Amino acid sequence: MRSAEGTRPGDARPRALPPHVLFAERLLAVLTGERPVHWMLGQTIGEAYEQLIRLAPANPLRAAGVAGPSPGRHARPVLRHCAGSPLRPGVVEAYASVTAGGRVRAMAFRLELGADRRWRCAAVELGPTV
Image (cartoon, rainbow, N blue to C red):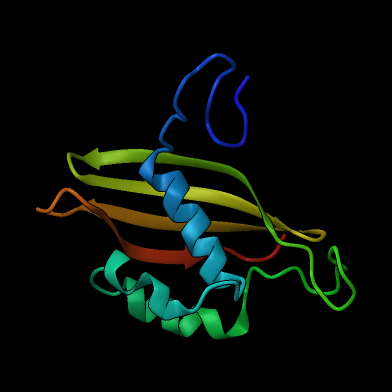
């Protein structure tokens, strides 16, 4: 069993999360309005940043109408599941399901490994509300 930090009981150090899980959390923060779009500037390439600029103003993953821990605040959406599939070395296509209140949304994104060995998001898509 793992804790939220990615450790197992008895492990000395937290286990690093896979890049697709880290990016799913980052995208969730931007698409809920928790973080501004420019927070992703150095973490995106190609069309991904433009896609976020178009998507983010509507806060599409925010849980509308669900009370949060304090009055006037919304409950934070939760990353339910996230998986990635390598297409070729240095390219991963990933998907995640996000629960926002009573809604479930799908999010797909592509990660590419740069020459500097850093992963960057190259594309983002959201599925319809279910």
